[in-house]
Image (tube, rainbow, N blue to C red):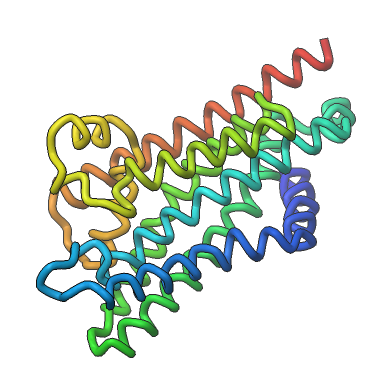
Length: 256
């Protein structure tokens, strides 16, 4: 694992040098939180959707922001492939797991920073509005947001290995839009019902958003918390495993 941590340190430095990382990973989710809060204020309290209220909007916005972790993971891997950096690493004793961990660990740390800053921003807004969110719930939510972060990072690993540095960002952007819409970040699929709700429940994004909201509210129901937690954990494990598998296949193909 020493090799994995050394490689993760290099990837983290690369991420820190990219100003777009600060803009999209940190700044954009907070900006969306502020914008949607302003939108909620312009809607009459008795007529507006509850998902735009700060206690519901804040954890969902973090899940939306995690999509940008996927984008930067995919772009980082695809760029290293283009510049033959990964090809040279294949000749070293590093395994596919260590290479995957080297990309995943710094992104997971970035996910913690992103979630913490967004949740703190939401808490400050809630205090200003006179409806302070539960600080314990936000801390618990920070932990429960990690499965969805790993899921999105896993998607990024897969896309980075399979697609070029030009195609990977486009595919990631499509999934960010799809995940935020079908995940129920900006609309309530439960209120919509019908085939739209059925489609949402067939994908993990819906459960990741529900898990974040239930965690922040400390609501431990089977349908609202435990089932989404199981789906999010399984999805994260499956995507990370798929990413390692793709790395292994790519290594064998390039070395063979």
